[in-house]
Image (cartoon, rainbow, N blue to C red; front, side, top):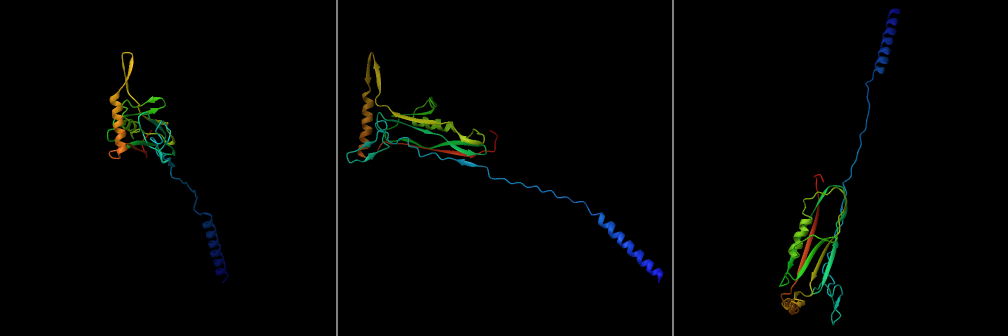
Length: 218
């Protein structure tokens, strides 16, 4: 009986020792948390205001009032001229390109060649061809979609489109300045067409500027 008691005590001691040793040899563990977040890159292109290139143009900017007190705008005539300044602005966080697409550039019913057009960077004229077609080519060459601009504030230069319908053409003969009467007759014919209300001479000009993200280096 005494032997069994001693054996029981020995077994109990071994069990306690084994449990204690097992408890001191737990595996190593560690935790590291990686966290990050991102937002979508800013892409904010300000729209150009509606082009008012030919608004209130008669008499070099004065509004025409007819006998019935109707205000006439968007009227051109010999001696009128106008201009329009434009600039693309915005905030973008990616590289980008700009492409100008002239969707409409048309002078109708005999107006062709009566008006001259200029695309200007400050005082520098960018087009050598002063026709409406020349203006179209100059704009599309200025923003042809191939130049890669760096991300950041989209704040391009201010450019100006100018136009003028020369009041009269003259030539110098000896010491005299002679008015081109044929030119006056052509201008008069255009005015008569407009008065008739059919085949009215018009100039139409529409251009879109498209800004596109680029994944190429600037």
